[in-house]
Image (tube, rainbow, N blue to C red; front, side, top):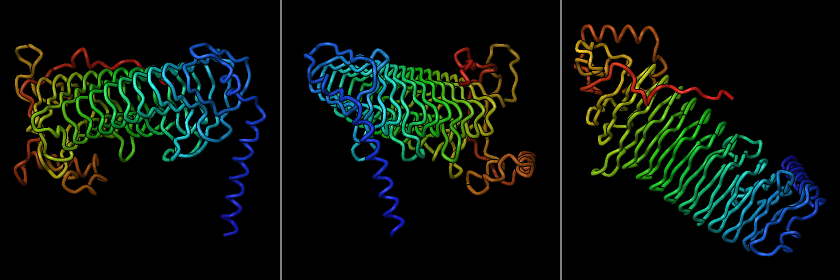
Length: 419
C-alpha cells in the first residue's frame, strides 16, 4: 500500500510539474480572445501555453515558429465552431486521459481545416465527433511514448461525414479509426509503427486510396462496414500472430483493387463476408506476395469475386479454416506462381485450369497446433506422399478456369521508400 501511494504521488508530481512548466508560458488564449471573427491570428514566434478554445471562426497560423504546450492537461486545442483554420503549429504535451480523449486537436464543428501541423507527445492526434466536411491534411502525428496498446489514435472519426483525411504522416500512434461515419476520404497517408493503420466500424461509403501502411500490426480492417472502396494502397510487413494486410468481417459490397499487400502474415482475411447474401465483394488487380497465407477464409463462404490478382511467393495461397473450400467464390484470370500448366497457343492464359487442393501439408487447417510444423521437411514429405497416393479424397480449395501465365501490368511491384 505504501509503495502504491508513493507511485501515485510521483505521478501526481510529474503531472503537476508539467502543468506548472507550461503555465510559465504566455497563454495563447489571451491572443485568441482579442482576435476578431474570421480574421487571421499570427502569434509572435515562441512557445505558448494551452489549452486553447475556439468558439468562433478564426485562422491561427503559426508560420512554423509557434508551439502550444498543453501542460499535460486535457487537449491542446478545442474547436467548437465552424470554419476555423489551424495551421503551421507545433502542438504538444496533451493530457493522458483516454476517457476524455486528450488530443492535439478536438473538433466539434464543420468546415474546419487542420493542416501542416506537428502534433507530438499527445495521447490522441486529431479527434472529430459529429463533425462534417472538415479537412485534415499534411499533419505529422505521433502519440505518447508508451506501450502500443495504451497509446491514443492518430485520427479518430465518430459519427462524422464528408471529411477528407489526406497526406498525413503518422508514426507510433495506435490506430486510425472510423466509427459510424460515411462518405469520408482517407488518401495518401503514411502510417508506420502502429496497431491498425485504418480500422472501420459500422461505417459505409468511405474511400481509401493511395495510402502507405508499413510495419503496423494490421493494415486495413473493415467491420460491419459496407460499400467501402480500398484502392491503390501499399500495405507491407503486417506481421505477428494477428498480422494481416486487409481484413473484413461481415462486410459487403466492398471493392479491393490495385493494392500491393506484401510480406504480411496474412494477405486477405475474410470473415463471413459478404454478409448480405445479395451482395458481392470485388477483389481485383491486387498483388498479394510473400505472405504466409495469401487469402485466409474463416469458414466456407461465398460471394467474393477474385479477378486479375497476382499471387506470388506465398507459402500458402488459400486456406479455409475447418477444412472447407473456397470454391464457391469466383476465381477468374488470376496469376498463380505455382501454376504447373502450359500455354501452347500463347494467348497468355493457361491451357488447363489452376486447381488448388487441400493435401496433408494443410493439415493445420483442421488441427491448428500443427501450424508449428508448417513448412518443415516432415510436412513436405507427407504432402508428397499424399499427392502420390491420397489417403482420402483431397478437397479442392480453388479452381481458376483462366489462369494468367504472367502478372498483369496493374500488379507489378513498385519501388518503395525504405525509411
